[in-house]
Every structure is written in structure tokens, then in C-alpha cells.
Amino acid sequence: MMKLSPRLLVAAVLAAPTLASAFVLGGTTPGKWGSPVMGTGATVTWSLMASGISCASPTESPGCTTTALASFMPTGYLTEIQAAFSAWSAVANITFTQVVDSGRAFDHPLATSGNIRLGGHVFDGAGGVLAHGYYPPLNGTTAAGDIHFDVGDTWKVGVAGPGFSIFQVMAHEIGHAIGLDHTLVPNSLMNTTYTLAFLGPQADDIAGAQHIYGMPIAIPEPTSALLMALGLAGLVLRRRAQAG
Image (cartoon, rainbow, N blue to C red; front, side, top):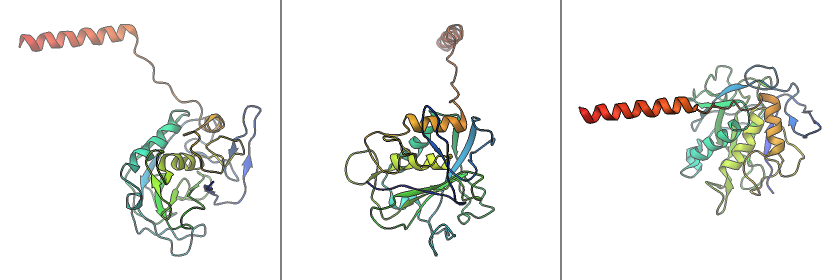
């Protein structure tokens, strides 16, 4: 079982157990995107870092430079990344939007690209730590939310075959990036070990995300009257087209 590691720019962890769950919030001050009020929604941007960007910092190895995900992950990796973001949006009031990365160094004070920047670099070779994610503000500066994968591990699309699931690892690290720490609850995505016994956020993970961002906003279904009106409008347009 391989460990997935969160990164904390200020030391300490705050646990927030409830009667219904035992999710854990990350950071000395529980961080979140958007309004600091717990239970309120947020829109979060993300971007893909290029290769060769400096990631040297007190929390990363000296001389650290990034490797673009496309350089070491298989074709189809981006679909897995997008699906992992969607898995969290489906269960909590948080929207993720991809933007172009600025190309500035990791944790640069002016790195005004994605709130969550994605890249890879050398960790500890095959096995061991697969990835790590930084907690959201107020924890750190622009490093907050960033996610790094180990270029020394084998990554895969889907669940079949050798390697580690990009979707499952990314979904776990997004949990850190939106404000969740590891939980001791078995069969939770935010547990410390990698598994494919399930995919995506589970009950404890969902409870934590909703504690921070609230319930997902449901898109109202069209009313019967509206559907009928649209149908009639379409019929009229088709008849006009035929008449023309």
C-alpha cells in the first residue's frame, strides 16, 4: 500500500470529528477557497505547469524543477484529471475551471495562474510517496492548493494493468487542495493509502467537502410547460424551413 502525502506550509493539523463522520480539516487555520465562512461555495481555477519550472522551496528538495504531466503520463491523462475535479464538484458546492499557467516558479508571490497548479517532479523513485497536495489558503502563499506527482512512478488511465490510477491519486490530492487532511476512516478516499477497492470520494470524504463548501447546487429541471414551449418552437422552425 503506497502512501499519498499532504503538504502543510504551517505545521499543525486540526481535527474536526462529528457524530456522523470523522473527516479531518487540514492546516493550522482550516483553509478553504472562496469565502472563509465554512459551508459556502467557491470557484477554483487550476492549471498545468510546464517542464523546467523551479519548484525549489523549503518544502521541496533543493534544485527541484517541474516536469509537465504530459511528459510522463500516458495519453488520456487529462481526461482522468478532469474527471477527478468533476467527482468533487458533484458532491459539494465547488466549481473547478482550467486556466493557462503563468509559468512562474512554484510558490512565487506573483504566480497568478491556477489556484491549483499541477506538475510533477522527482520524489523517491518507484513506490513510496506517489503525490502530494498543499492545503488551500490561509496555508502558505501561492503554493496553496498545488499538486505534484512523482515522475518515478508508473501512471495509468483507468484501473486495469500495472501502475497507479491517475484519477484515484488526483482525486485524493484534490481533497487536500480543497482543505481535507487524511482520515482514519477505512474505505475513505482521504485515508492514507492507495487503493482501487472503490473510486472517488466516499461518505466521509463527501461529509468533509460539504462541511467546507456546502451541498452541490442542483440545476433545476425544465418544467413541463417550458419543454412543451421548446418543442412547439422547434416544430414551427422545422415547418418554416420546409416551407422555404
